[in-house]
Length: 257
Image 1 (cartoon, rainbow, N blue to C red):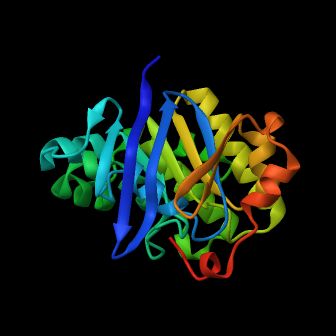
Image 2: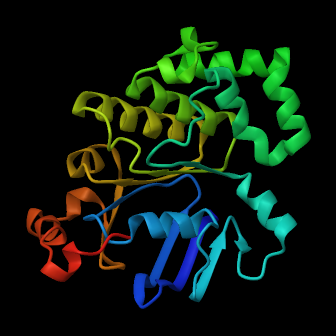
């Protein structure tokens, strides 16, 4: 099996701060991995390195068998179309309909002119495909609803539907359940892990909810101060190891990466 990601000695700096510090990480195609750790530990920076947004200052990052350092703009853009990202604040356009937001999932692959046309005059095939995706995520009746009128949980599902419409090889989700109640957080994480198994895409998700990470993910990667400090099956990680992950010094509490 090939690796979706292969990172060797990766360091990402912001000024004097190493937000990710000499990280080695391999993630196999189709694997489900939860990144855990306190705020400021480097989870978001790592995800942004994986989706080719953050360039590493040192080391190497290979994404879907492509070494991204020095990759030309056209090849990098093509690579990004194979990676869907669900950001913490979802990245939806609230004055557009659910249908239009989901169509934007293929904006990178289709280009500007076609994307504008699709937003204004969506094809029957796109409408049918998106309706099917919305049915799978449980909001099929919201197809033409303005996104700003949806609840937080429904907006999460629009972001998931947009990622699925992209038909990616990888979905990266950065704290996608930080703004909803525990029940909706549970259902969202459960849905994403189910979809990963159904469609075979790699799923990497950063989570503050350690209980959800342990329940739904077969592999946990713990980060602290930009370094991976634990990596394994949740059943093999002791409560003491997990507790220590979240015991921060005063200096660490002032960082946010």
